[in-house]
Structure formats: structure tokens, C-alpha cells
Image (cartoon, rainbow, N blue to C red; front, side, top):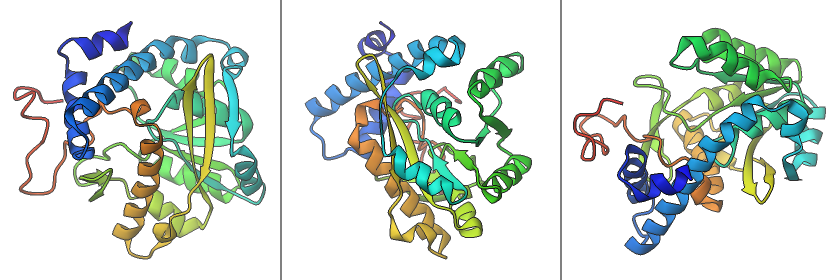
Length: 273
């Protein structure tokens, strides 16, 4: 099993996960943190193992993996009144979340092309086969999100990726400062649409899909830093509800404010990625 191997042997994923858990759970005793590390890496292996099915099975077979759905009524009711902005963090089976949502409502979502250009056609076809429309994470894609919201559709954003040096602001995320996208806050300010979060929890035989309406009062603050911080608090609550299913093996805190060192360099002094 891939996850067991990741947890048992030295690897980039294991060391990055360990660093992230130390940063975000400093009060956790060592034994508990090691248990969480192992559980997280097992889930990371499960994520890898799921890709062939989620990308290659017929849509009907994939969608049948939804064993339970929670909160969808409020989400659909909000969408019946107009556009909805939907966040799908890297928690649980995020690939399944996109496929499920697109099967239920018109969905336009940002994506980053894969590093191997020859894989892009397969990548986009797999993600769009239940009805989603993928648009590039650039100015044209942002305009497409605006149009989707204006037209009463759903716009999807992955909110917990580093947007790149100079493209975000540093605000707390799960404790440490993290370079965080401002796109969500700017879309909320300009459109006034409701904000929901969606994630797919792994359960025996499939997934439990959760739709959660955002409730942070400062999400629409005119102060951009306050609004982005409020978004991260919403994300943090989801992550802490099932921390073992979060993608801790991603270098979320690599880009630092001026004067702060990359926390991952201690583990991979010669590594660039």
C-alpha cells in the first residue's frame, strides 16, 4: 500500500508532512503527532491510488461512490437565488468533490495546467466529464469566474495553494503565516454572492460529501487582510475536523515574509521544489 510505504520509509512527503505538523500543531505531543503523520501519509497514498478510478471510470460509476451528502440542500437553495462561490480545499478526495458538484450544478473552476504539456488534454477531459468547465488560473479565467457568478452559476476555487511570490498576502493559516490568494475576497467584494465550502470525506466504500456555508463575519470586510484571514479561519475549521485527510505533504509555507527562512530547507537543503 502506497500510504504505508510513505509512512514507513524516508521520503520527501514524510519530511514535508512532519514539518507542516510541527508548524501547525505545536502543542501536540510527539507521539500524537507521529500518529497523525502516519495517518496522513496513509491518506496521501489513498489519494494517489484513487486517481485512476476518479479520472478514468465512467462518470456514472464514479458518482455512485457518493455514499452520503450533507448540507447540499442549503447549497442548492442558495444557488437557486443566483451565483455561488465554492471553495474546495485539499481535504479528503478533492477530485471527487469537483466531479460531484459539476454533476449537480453548472460549475466553472480555475485550474493550473499540468507540468507535462502532453497530459493536459487527458487532465481536462477527466475533470470536465461530469459537466465542469475548466478555465486557466490567469486573467481570462478570473473573468470567466465573474461571468459565471453574474449568470447565476457556481464558480469554484482551490483556496489553499500558494499563489506564488508577489501574488498573495501573508496572513495566518492553521497557525503560521502563509502566502494566501486574495481572489476569493475580491470576488466576494465585487459580486456579493454567498460562499460555500465543499469537501469529500473518505468513508468505507466511497465518500461523504460535505457542503458547508461560510459564516465568518469578516469574510466581506473592506480590509483585505481581515477578509483573507477570515477565509483561512473557515478553511482551518474544516481541516481540523479531519486533519488526517488533509494534504500535509504540500509545501504550503515555503514562501515566507522577508527575513524568514524556508522551513523545509532543513530537510532538503539541495532541493528546489
